[in-house]
Image (cartoon, rainbow, N blue to C red):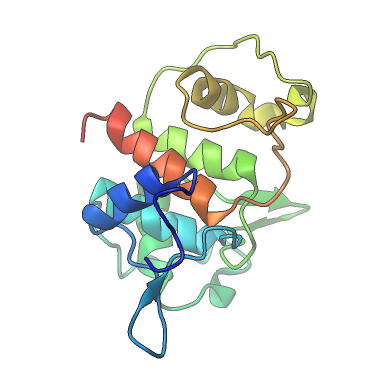
Length: 186
């Protein structure tokens, strides 16, 4: 990747995913690849990366009618989203009387963490977390975020905050996916 030097904080994680053929970056007009580590990532992009990292089978014939926004999911993403739905790693979100998958939306840090830790299929318990903004973590995500912190799967910012509702960046995603694989012994 031409935009991620060995001095970048996530170099180990990004190069580890590149070496495992999980990420390949964006092809530039000159043929070089850029990772764009500071860019935000969509839910669909994250779902694809989790499916590839776990080597899950794609699901091409998923109905999707339970989700009111299934028609808005881009065609390339549907087999990946469906694979994670069938694996129970994603479930969608209830918004009033509708259930949406929100595939085209940016993924928040707590959503990224929850999806990734769910992929581990581990037993979770309530934990005490020493982060000034942990009270901002949604109830449904708190056990997942605590697990990720306890297992060094994510970083806190310089003020020791989780920043659960900020959008996840590609470098943060690389870190948690790399740590997912490490935790699994892959």
